[in-house]
Image: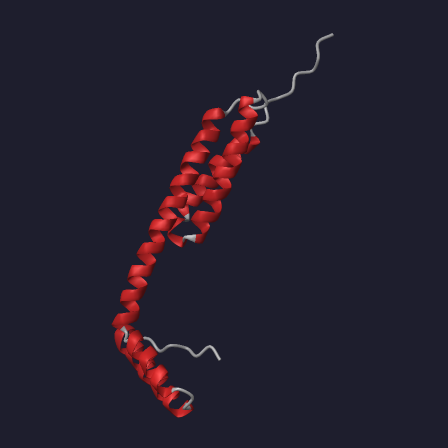
Amino acid sequence: MQPATRAPANGLGIAALLLAIFGLLLVWSVIGGLIFGITAIILGILARGRCKRGEATNSGVAVSGIALGAIACVLSLVFVGIWTYFGARWFDDVGGRDYVSCLQQAGDDTAAQQRCEQEFERRVEDSFGVTPTPTR
């Protein structure tokens, strides 16, 4: 009687590849790219371990998951720079620095703080043609 052969446990490698692909699709959101990318790298490393022990047969898929997961992480970090750069430019364009300076000068004076807020809202309206909705 022959001992039962166990089917290869290829699930981790496949999961690593799928998560890496999701990470690449979400690099623009930064957090999605990082979370999926890091998870793909971890699962890919675990899958490679299974391949080396002979428990899995999809070494290439695992390596692809690791590589694409790493690329997703790097691209997410690039997007951090992009979002920071354009966010700072937008903040400057609508008078964000003036708003912060005005609030600092206003101190505890609520009327002065309200004038700062109204001026900033006016600038946002002028720049984008929309009225900011208060969150309070």
